[in-house]
Image (tube, rainbow, N blue to C red):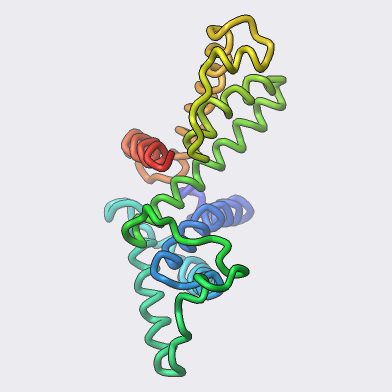
Length: 230
C-alpha cells in the first residue's frame, strides 16, 4: 500500500484514503489521552489529518530507513498539538479542560485507562482498528461462503474474549448450543476460521509496513496487545 501512495491516479487516491481511515481513530485516541474532551479532540484530529497528513503529504515523506511510519506520525502529531496549543494561548485563554467528565453528551469515547501514555493509547487504538478491519473482512467472507455457523463459533470462542473481555465459551457448550455432535466438531469449525483470520491478519499487516521482514514482529506485537486488552 505504501508503494501505491507514490503513484498517481485512482490507485494512489484509494491507498491514501485507506490509510487516513486506518489512522483516524489512533490519532483521536492519542489526543484524548492528552486530556482533551471529545469536541476538542475531534477538532484537533480533523486539523492534523487535513493540515499534516494531507496538505504536507506526510505519507509520501515516510522513509523506510528511518523506522516505522507510525513513529513518524506520532512525532508529527505531538508537534502539531503543541503548535496548536501555542497558537491558542496567544489568541485566547485555553478552554477549561475536563468537561467530558461532567458532560455525558461529550463523554462518549473516554480515553483508555489502561494506556499509560498518549503513545500507548495510539498503539492500542491502531491495533484495535486493524483487528476490527480484519474481523469484518473474515466475517463477510464466512457469510459469503456459507460458513455462518463457523463464524458464530469463532466469535464466541475467540473474538468476544479478546475484543469484549468476556470469558471464552468451552467447546462442549458451543457444540450443544449449535447442534453439533461434540466438542471436537466445534473445535474443528473454529480452527477453519482461525486459519482464514491468520491469513487475513498477515495480509493486512503487510499493507502497513515498508519491509516484509517487519511482518512477524508486527504480528506478535498486535496479538499480544489485543490479548492484554482481553
